Length: 39
Length: 351
Image (cartoon, rainbow over all chains, first blue to last red; front, side, top):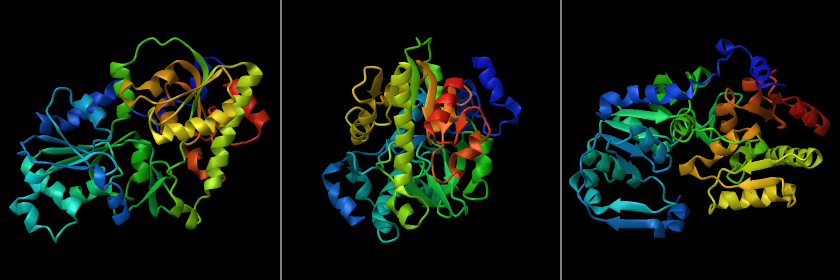
C-alpha cells in the first residue's frame, strides 16, 4: 500500500475527532496562551 | 509514605539562598526541559518535586514567618512549595506533569492569583464507569474528584471531550503534542530510512497492583499482550529478513531500560537485524528512530497517537479488555485486534 492510499484509508481529516493540531502550530498556540504572563 | 520518605532521605540536600522573584515557575523538573525549550530565553525557576532524585531544600524558605505560620495547616511539602511560591511571586506556573497531585493541590489553593497551566504529557484514559481517571497509561490511578487543573492544554478535541465534566478544568486549549512539535521544530531533517519496523517497547514495571485487586485489570494480560506484539514482530523480522529497532522509554542507565533490554532481548535472540535502543530525552532519539523507520508498531502508547497522522502505524490491541484502544483506531487500516500470528503478518505486510 502506498503512503497516499494508507492515509486515505485512515479516513477524512475533518472527520477525525482525535486529530491533533499540526506540530507547526502547537508551539505558537502555547506561546500565545502564556505570552501575557511571561513577558 | 513514611517508608518512601525514609528510603529517599539521602537524596535531600539543604542550602541557604535568598529567593529571587520570577514571573515563570516550572513545577517538577521532570518535563521541564521541554517547557524551557518552549520558553526560549525567558527566565524561569524550576521547582523540585521528586524525592527519588536530588531534592534541594532552601532553608531560607523554611525559616520564615509564612512557613512557620502554616506548619500545622498543610502537609510539609505543600507548605514548602507555598512558601517558596510566596517568595518567587510568579504570574504563571507551568507543568508538563499533568497528573501531579501536588500540582492539583497548589492550583486549588492559588489559582485565583496565579495562572496555572498543565500541558498534556501522554494519553489519558477513563475507566468504563468514568469513576477514575487512569493516568500514565494504566500505571497510576487518580481519583477524578481530586484532579484540578485551571488551564489544560490538551492534544486534541478527542481528549477534551473525553475529560470534560469528569475532572475540574476551567479552560481547555487544543494545542497538540508539545514534544512532537519541539522535535519538528529543532531536530527535524531528512532522515535516511534505516529500519523497516520500529517497535515501541512497553514498560510494565510500574504497573499499579491496586488495579488488579480491584478486579479492573490483570497484569498477566498486559504482559502477554506486549510480549505477543514483540514475539510476532521479531518472528516476522526473521522470516522476512526485516530490520527492526525497538525503542525503549528509559535512558541508558535507567532501570526501565535495563528491564526492557532483558525482556525484549529474549525475543530478539541476538539477531543482527533487531536492535534495542535506549531513549535520549534531550536528543529526542525515539522520534528520530521512528522517522528512520517505515512503520511504527505498538500497543497502548502515546507515541502511536502522536504520530498517527504523520507516520504509518499499526496499533495492536491484544488486551483482554477491548475498550482500551479501540476508540481511537476502530475500523481503521492501522488497527488490529485479532491476536493470531497469521492475521498480524497479513495486516502488517498490507500496511
